[in-house]
Length: 327
Image (cartoon, rainbow, N blue to C red; front, side):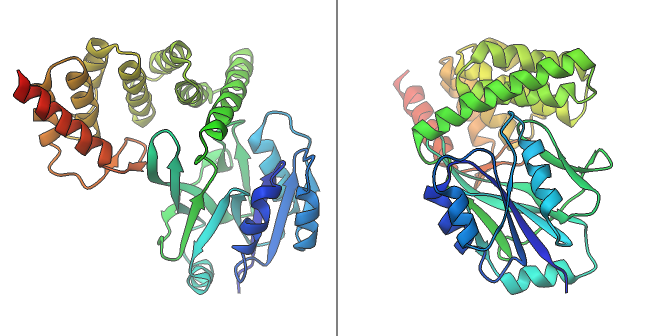
């Protein structure tokens, strides 16, 4: 039978950690908790739960802390978790998936909710064989093997879903956004000094973090720099997607409409971006043409695969209809 280590990095998580660890019942052979400088009861909660407790002084690098947890893990498989996350699913089904001669890594479904934008779902490579795997990236970290991103298979959400609670409080969301922006800035500065080949990915991280923190010019600069470095491919498309979002938030609708033409006009998400820019610039009829062309999309899926509740689409389409009828 395969063995599973669940690895967490934590700091001042006494509010969340007990419930997180309780959600692991019947699933983990080993729990590793690496503390990055807690001043509350986090360490004691981990000890009482029987976790292997490690320490990693916080230095603004999520990957380094996660690698310390990996170094303490003994399981054949590792599930990476945060204290503000809860596991939902079928432990026996998960065991069967790990015991089968299948992929070496799985993407796990996340059930999330942002206090600013509402519910959304996405997948992330959180479950993988421990041997040969390391984390890279100071922020928006990701697991790699031999320096290459893991190739993952989608794990059935009924077998395992991770519910994230950490973005449901507006003050917490804003605080994390500022923290991530600081880390992303440092990562880009270091990459520029060393000619790091990961610079385009780090620029995407910086652009995303700056957008979340409301520093729109920083986001524009980072995403434009990414586009200068990457002439085509999925990374450029993701950078363009986020740049169009930034420009819409900034009210730069003509520039957003120009850039969105680089993306696939048949994609429902691209129609959503274009529809927003048209509607907000007073072109309600053209916006409705785009939004109605989404063929009744049951969800909004961006170019990274993140899936959003369609309620904002419905509300925006209704607004455009009212504006069109009023003309």
